[in-house]
Structures are given as C-alpha cells and as structure tokens.
Image (cartoon, rainbow, N blue to C red):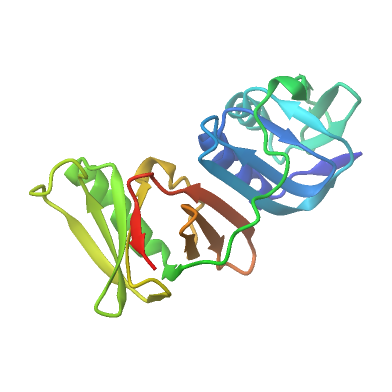
Length: 228
C-alpha cells in the first residue's frame, strides 16, 4: 500500500519521538507510544490505516529521512518502507526493526473514575513550562483552593523557594489534594486539554481540538497526597 502521511501524523510522530526514541505501529489507524520508564503513554488516531505491524528503532532518524523528500509518499514492503517524493524520481529504502526489541504499550490505559477534572488551555500550559524553566523547578503541584484548581510550579525539597501558580476552572470530589506531576513528562502536542486525575496516581490529558484524536496518560509522582 502506498500513502502520503498527513500533517497530523507527522506531528504525532515528531511528538512521540520525544516520549520514546522508538515506536511500534500496529495494523489499524492508532499510533501509541510509551516512555521507557512507563510513566508516559500517548495515543493518537490518525487518518491513515496501516495494513501491517512494523517497528522503527530510531524515530527521529526516520523523521529526518522523511524530511529528505517533499510530501513523502510511503509504500510498505514486508521488511522495509519505500519512501518517495511527489515526482516519483527520488526513493529511499528504510528497513523496519524487530518489534520484540522495542518498548511499546500493549493496550491503552483504562482510566479510573477521575477525582479531579480541569481545563488546561495551551496558553496556560506554555506559561507553566516557561515558569518551570525560569525558576529551575521540575514539578507541578495540582491543588483545590477556594473552589478553583490551582496549578503551581514548585521545588518540593524547598518550602521557601519561589513559586509560580495559576488558577484554572475545575472540580474535585476530594476534600483536599496535592497531586504532583513532573514537568518533564508533559510532552504534549500544542493543544487545549481536558485533564482528569485519579487517586490511583494516574492522569489523563485529552486534546480538546476537534481535529485531533489525541490522549496522554501521565503518572503522578509518589509524593502526591489527597484526602477523600
């Protein structure tokens, strides 16, 4: 089968390369990835339907190869991809990797009933990441204060360190909570997200963009605490 990869699929592959350097793509139209530490999992539904299972060992290298031709068109052979350009003159042969050697999720996470839900728009997400960079802190604290969800960039080891915080609309069933997420795990495609967090210390980020069928599951740190 020959196909041109859509802009969204390319965006997904570029983003997933930041989560894990390799990827296993299974038959169908869903692409999933999982970090080596198994604390971040991403899933996207794309417009292409893949006919076979294949593995790519170095996803960034693969993207660089796709970048060698304009509007790359790919054709699947049993053991490799043929990548061509729109003129049909240039051609690249790219071999698959043994999928048994690669880290890949077997199935999506079944999200438990969420205990905290809030909206996270792209501007707020970018501000949080910028604040983490400026303050040199690596963690985000999620708390419920005065009827709002409060997101704060903190240094958990220093209670007198500078913090940045912002209130967002949300709700919780808990009487008190302080969920901690590592900023380095927020490897998200630029979008607005609905965020749900469970006391099982798992969070789900679902893109609110109608053109993106995209979800991430990110583990909360063990230092999180809450009261029912």
